[in-house]
Image 1 (spheres, rainbow, N blue to C red):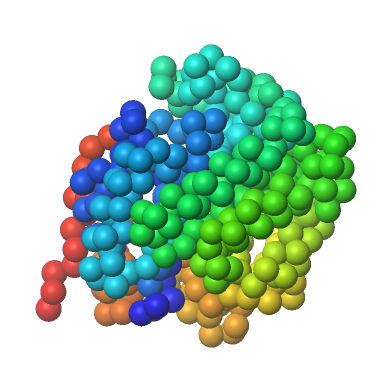
Image 2 (cartoon, rainbow, N blue to C red; image 1 turned 45 degrees about the horizontal axis):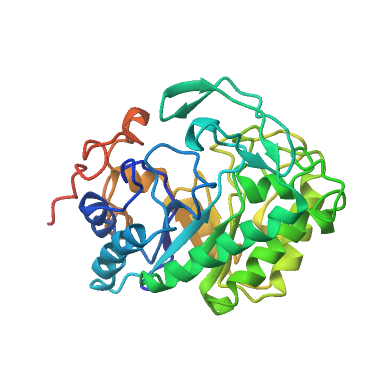
Length: 347
């Protein structure tokens, strides 16, 4: 890696109804090729995993070929990119699934107003609990998606176990009310993630696999009273696999559940022996401090990369950042607010 700046996964909704990466997405990622590592936007592993309008997938040939255009372009700049593997779970809606309910660890509805669907804003629905016998097929979907990521030219994969999506729904006691071998104790709630990691390690070496966790977040109505026990157990267990990294959303800029003192990188450092990536709300100064003090090896930046394709150069040269991107264009369907942010004039 040429630097310790990671481009965080950013869901942008530019892949169209067929969820196939396109030339506009090639331009967007290539503009940001100076990052030390790019983690792709969340990418659905299957039709069942869908839950965001026009987000990309990695479950058919056209999607795989579309991603190949992006990896090929970035590799011309020697920029590594990991694909983030995603299943939305209950953070979805029946309109994404032909009228069938979304699935989750348990039939626990998101406490929220509305979700963006192909039909516009609609109320959240109660998901269907996955049957015990179904879980293995979802694990296989992760394995197959990881295989397609390898064939599309990615340098590795990140397992999205954060932000209230399916794996997080299994990890957390708030959303996991199961009584089978995937529910109850922290060990059982971790089992789903363990099986996914082990399945993917049949495709990728451990040094090309990362995991993302969000211990402090309340996004998608998350937050469990036993969050500290849950996530320290997960970190300790994941350390055994000698993964590329553990990506921890430790910052509070995207919401905090306020169920105790927020978890810090130092707590994860004590449990996870490999590299750590910190994320959420970091500035250049706080990022450099985290690296200099040994709390993290890398820092991922999300929103600053939206409006600053040359973020690394701006950090390096002390150049002013562009104004933040308007939230209205974060997931808009055009190049506006996507590829039209200016690079800093070269001296």
